Structures are given as C-alpha cells and as structure tokens.
Image 1: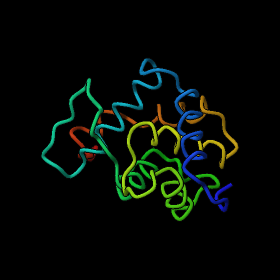
Image 2: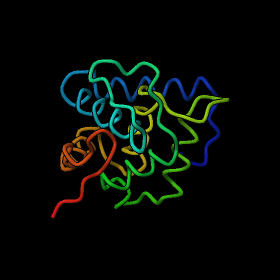
Image 3: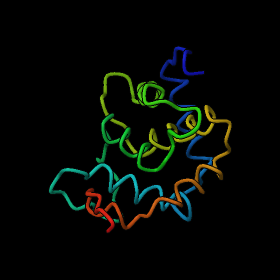
Length: 141
C-alpha cells in the first residue's frame, strides 16, 4: 500500500475512512484533535485554541515527532514509512496535513501495522497528553 501511487480521489477516500474510523470530534477523535493541536504548535509561541482547528496544519517534522513519541513506529513502521504516509496524505501542492488528512494518516498507519483504529487509539492513550503542553514536551524526572 505504501508503494501505491495515490491520486487526489484516493487521498480524499483515505481521509474519509480515517474520519469515519474515529467518528466526530468526541471521545477518541476529541483526544486526537487535542494531540494534533499540541504537535502543530510545537516550537512556536502559538497557544492552541481548544475549540478551533481550522487553519492548523502539521508539517512532516512534527508528524514524525508525533509518531515517534506516541510509539507508532515500534512495530512494522520505520521512519521512512512515516515519511511515505505523510506524503500520501498531504494534499497535492501542499506541504502540511490538516486535521482530516492527519486522521487519514493515522488510518493508514493502522492499516500498515495490521491494527484496527481502536488499537491505535489505545497506543495513543498510553501517551501522556500532559507531556505535550503548548507543543513542548516536558521531561519527567
């Protein structure tokens, strides 16, 4: 699947599948939205608005950081696989993921690792949200 060439229709289908897998911004999707906001803001002075995700985008460096820190690269997914997933999910002519493309990327990660979205949610649930505050990870002592 990572070697397949995606056209814009296939990318949109992937984003829709990701959104359907986690549902509307409630429950798991709500937590994913907060994580998305925090990683988009990493390294900036911008404080994420808890309600508004419009205009927020995640670049490949922040997406790789998110995958690494949330232990999504532990099984069958390599850092180069993360880069390929990012490239497949980013809209043509763009360099960043919006929230819906981010959900599509998570859906593709689940597929590549032979996991269902619920298992990915559990993996993400093990990541302490409090570690990523305003985009900066605080070291625990």
